Length: 112
Image (cartoon, rainbow, N blue to C red; front, side, top):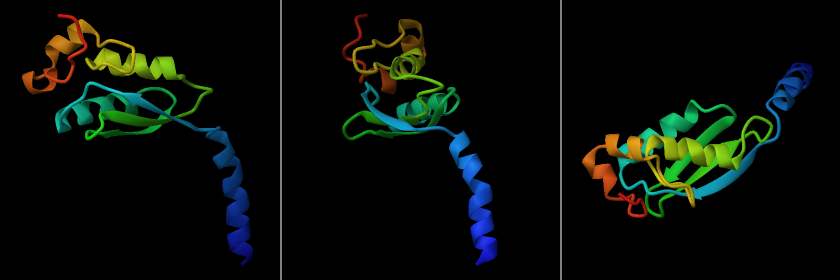
């Protein structure tokens, strides 16, 4: 029992270092598994994002992030830089053009 309490007390400072986390849901133009992998991989490399999960059924990505390290606008920009729309932020046209043809059908809101 003492070991369990000690372990919990030792872990507490590390848990608080991670900071508060918030979750945001963002509508994307993603349509397939390749889109999902591309967006989630890019977000995993972004500062302040701890996890993301894109639901292809409703094209919405849930992103858990640390608001002390990033914000919703930066997350939307990161998605747009990969070539996908993110709510009102339109996909970067150069990145969009580099997407596989199967991924381009979903970005209907983009002006070409």
